[in-house]
Image (tube, rainbow, N blue to C red; front, side, top):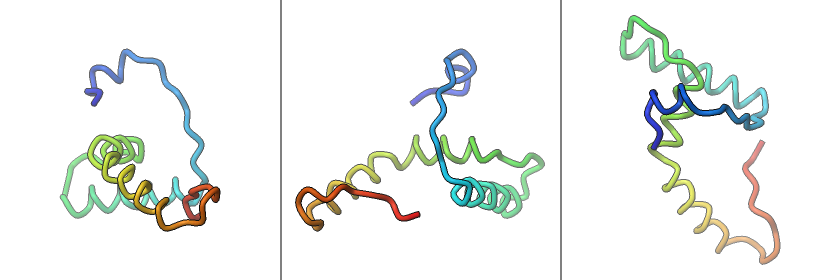
Length: 80
């Protein structure tokens, strides 16, 4: 996974996330900062990177498992 130094020198690419999910990231980042009594609040972007770096493979595996339970030809979608 990319380190913080790598991220500072790479080009940024945007990914669309609905406002409701951005708000969920905001609230979760605030909660982490509060419950860890951190002097610095983590950003929603830091939280998103953490999730990708630590849980992406698990999500991929779960999507693959879920696809086995769906109707063939029906696309997998995340609930809004």
